[in-house]
Length: 212
Image 1 (cartoon, rainbow, N blue to C red):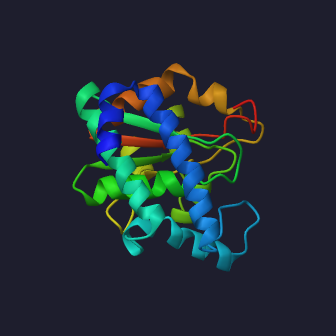
Image 2: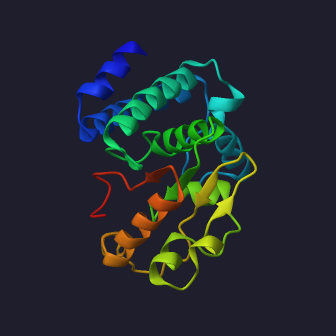
């Protein structure tokens, strides 16, 4: 933990973000070791239920290597947050299946259960693993709020574990994530979220999976 404290104090947010990517890789190894299923578009209902439970591993299994790693990661981010006024962070991976959904959900849950008003945002528009696993019945979300079709308050889902989730919402066929998420309306929405919440965690598409 002490090393992470020094790391957060001495490095830029971009370097802290790079550390998170390494944490995602660690999460994948730990999850594989414990035979927990990863998220995926074609998972069976049983596998998806088990995977959804894995998104709360930091609370359900607090003493595993994975959970302890997420706690250390939270400590490093919290120090950087205080030192630099960080209000949001994005979790990504190099390719699909590396564990970014699991890391993002558990990190957000850890912040929320520690008393920080936290919002988890599913910004991976074409995979939407968080939305599928945690808010399957949601009919509106991020895309609808950006377009002005839905008030932000009605797009946010309050989960039973105390965490708030902004699911993807209704994505039109052929929509380009970069056009939606890179718009001025999206930037204004992010600023609004940062005003409403103490910390916002975005799950974004893998870096090399598509043009997104």
